[in-house]
Length: 236
Ligand SMILES: Nc1ncnc2c1ncn2[C@@H]1O[C@H](COP(=O)(O)OP(=O)(O)OP(=O)(O)O)[C@@H](O)[C@H]1O
Ligand SMILES: [Mg+2]
Image (tube, rainbow, N blue to C red; front, side, top):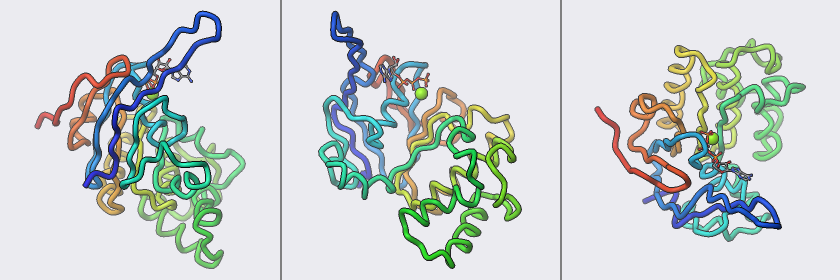
């Protein structure tokens, strides 16, 4: 069964009140993602990839269409119901350092969802963070450091650890490795594949890098000016 079904999804932006010009960022797209899948989303800059990711996560409101998550149309949810849904869907962005509050230690950053959302007992938090650090390949000595005191790769690992603390079912990875050097990029990709397996996490993998998408995804589709241009399975 599909975890996510997107049906005729549209997002239009209007530029102004006088002579409004409509930008059709996402224009009538439909696709599905199963629980055990990593699905690639390709397309040129401005084709609508990030907008699709943000729509599915309800960071922004759609103009029309349906987003069925685990059997429920989340475009119809009010803000209270949406709040309980949010932890189930997470997003990783290109710039990990910008995702981490610079005043927070890595430990507090990772532990925040455990404390605030999951309401885990403080005695247990330390242990849970240890497990998360281990799962993303970080060592204990990183706990007290801040985002500016660790590498880009370590930052992205910390971001992933925090995401795992939510126990999400769906992850949007938006060019998550494009700011990293090639070897770090390969490590983070490997990590995404591992957590996909271990946490049974469906992933929408946004990238403009065809080779990367072929290496990571079960299948992919490509957008052009807000529309889906092509569905494909990777070349082997
Ligand atoms: N808040 C907004 N208001 C108006 N137009 C927007 C807004 N957000 C995005 N757009 C427009 O929607 C289109 C799609 O943008 P989007 O960021 O989804 O592209 P993208 O495929 O992620 O591009 P990139 O590869 O550069 O990240 C672009 O034309 C963009 O200018
Ligand atoms: Mg984008």
